[in-house]
Amino acid sequence: MRKIYISILLVFAVCSVVGQNFRGGLRAGFTATQMSGDELSGFHKMGAYAGGFVNWRFVQNEHWFLQPEINFVMKGSSTFLRADKNGNVMGNKYVLTLYYVEVPVLAKYRIVKGLEVEFGPTFGILFAATEKDANGKMPGRMPFRRFELCGLAGVSYIFKEHLGLNLRFVQTAIPVRVNDGNHSSNYLEKKQFSTEIAFSVFYQF
Image (tube, rainbow, N blue to C red; front, side, top):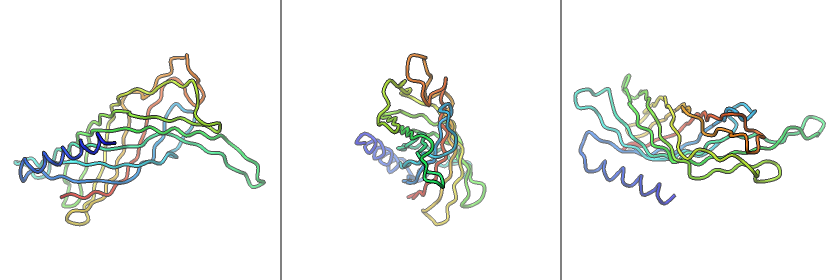
């Protein structure tokens, strides 16, 4: 976490030096994610989403911006035990949590004042992963790839001079994990891809 904070501070330090065409900001929110290839479905895993960004307005075109970011993102998948109307316990318990530091590099387009769309690649580094079932930590699991590559599309609405709301859809372009056949295959089919919906509030200086 210390490295994340240092990186965010460096982003804002650059922002303060380069001039009036650059603006910086902070965001905080949450994610709803799912993992394909885990025999489950639905955006049931909730997680934290926070970070910082700078955006650069093209001098010749006030509608286009370039926006690099550094974000902390929690992803994964989950399902839980539940009881039916007779009190009988049904289903299974499974919780996968992935902790990433991600660096989106986005192109943003201002449609009208206050409304912007964004798209671009996202590069991520996995620094922790936990995988548990009803018995605790699951042994013999295939590790996840250290790096990820995603595509991102989103929309922002700035409702005050410095405050805005952001909604994003993020999809991994390459598998985050590929089963080699030598590890436990419970909740793990051949390949796994991560899909994320992220909502955040941001403050732009």
